[in-house]
Image (cartoon, protein in one colour):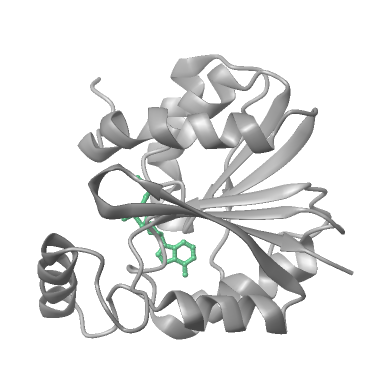
Length: 198
Ligand SMILES: C[S@@+](CC[C@H](N)C(=O)[O-])C[C@H]1O[C@@H](n2cnc3c(N)ncnc32)[C@H](O)[C@@H]1O
């Protein structure tokens, strides 16, 4: 049986991995939100063997992640969990950092705020929240292609759209996190790093 494929993951997984390996030097546990097909989870768990990776998705989408996880046979890639950022998060999670890719423009903005609130509750002091995706700065898109992508998202669903980085920084601050880095990535994306500060 062929596994579900998200073509963009083939292009962006290596540039993302380059940053993750710089921040994740020590043994740690990372919770991923909105794992999609699970292809990122497999790639990062494979090339960061000192990291325990916990993929999560909306319950309706978990079977995709599980198909990739089971095929990988990776011991440091744990069984995926159902996690909707707008619902109570799974109990008893012990995680050091949180990663999410290409989710903030898909979720409604209230859900993005909930993501930040949940991350603030979940992360220990100094824990990172890594966000990968396109963002707006000073209300401006970083490229014409991102402006076109935003239009396409809004035509598909009113609640979707590329978020303002300033709004994300404000929500992070409300949840006890500070922006520590914002790295430009290929194809007008960003790798944004927040850190939980007590
Ligand atoms: C564009 S996909 C990105 C998937 C994957 N991270 C990637 O980069 O290929 C957005 C994902 O966000 C998930 N998502 C949407 N709303 C969510 C919510 N409220 N809580 C958690 N995940 C959500 C969707 O199920 C979807 O898999």
